[in-house]
Image 1 (cartoon, helix red, strand yellow):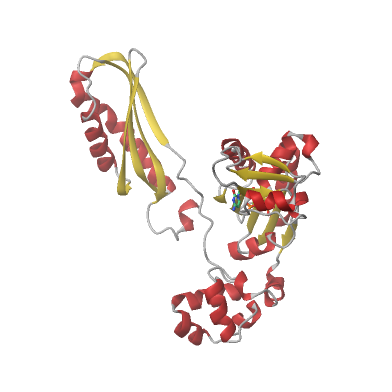
Image 2 (cartoon, rainbow, N blue to C red):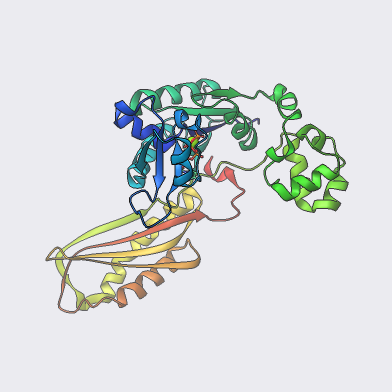
Length: 356
Ligand code: DCP
Ligand code: MG
């Protein structure tokens, strides 16, 4: 089935947030700088509002250069924690339309809306409106049948744009683009492709696959697929921040001496967590045991493993070894909790059907 993918990227993200919060800066060249408040360090531009870009100021430029180009600019320090909060608010809006959200940076995500009965263009438009209405910020969206096309589309009209690439338009859309638009084609590969007479994506698309493979190995085949608008990469929801936890209250009746019985208490929690992980197709990398004592003091012990944990038995083993490290003698235990975090796909990440 043809997929429906939306790529969303916020416009001049940090600068737009600052302009929103300080309306007197709207329409002004705002330049958000990393290291602005640390004068001994060399500041670098994190981003510039579109007004500032007209002066030639852009991300990664040195502060000194930005001041040269735009002396009248409003220079502000980065407030990363705050921007992260806004980023989470944006993800919350997305989550009303699909659970398949893959954030790729603080202001950029892929959404797979194939299962949503509405068409992707309408969803993208509504999401943009909602971001404007609720957060007073603008986003640019691209819609296509895969990630590669959706991202290219969103790059076409910025800011506040919406570009849709319909299946019948893919060929025309790609044909004249420079070959470096292909994922994985950096300056070196670009030169090599140029020596083969390949300057545009259209030329790459019709180039002999076998020759590309000889020249670039497997990557060559990948380039050829992208050039023909094929990209099978699934939208992978980021679950690394999610935690699955179970807790139980012991009411202070448990004394730490009875650690073996604490192990017993962990069993149903571990079983529960195992079931939850299996259902969602995830395994965990981090296991945490939390103990709250009578006097409200809390102890937490975690272990992150190199492999992945998914079975009750493994979970319990780690939990027990964590418990053994805590000195509970003579202490009254009020609550105990077991949780897993740092989630990853249980098997091959190329198995989106795990979600359906
Ligand atoms: N960022 C940064 N340093 C960089 C690039 C970006 O700190 N070298 C930060 C600031 C940006 C945010 O990441 O606001 C998002 O990056 P984008 O590349 O999406 O840039 P903007 O959202 O600022 O602008 P655009 O409208 O081009 O997306
Ligand atoms: Mg952006």
